[in-house]
Amino acid sequence: MNTRITGLLLVALPLTLTLATSGCGGEEEEDCVDRSCTTPPAAFCDGDLAVSYATTGSCQLDACRYATTTVDCAQLEQTCVAGACQP
Image 1 (tube, rainbow, N blue to C red):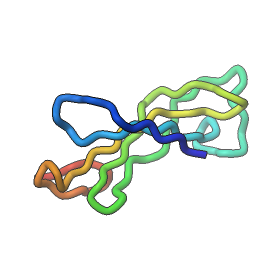
Image 2: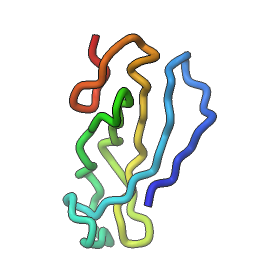
Image 3: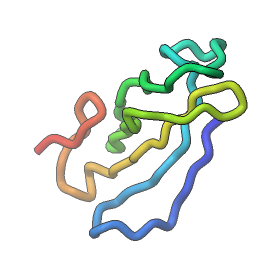
């Protein structure tokens, strides 16, 4: 389940934050009780949107959750490649 947070004002960058759920070690079914959440999903492109995850997550309801950052590369006059905006 993803929760999208919009309406943030950040230094003129087109940005959206999302909370992503993942099990620890990248396994969705694995619970994270008494474990660290340090294996976020890989960054990816969703069209012109670059989506990346925080390196450290938190354990909530037995699942690791990672904050995500989404940047609209087209608004920066760039292209999304492997989850990052490139000139």
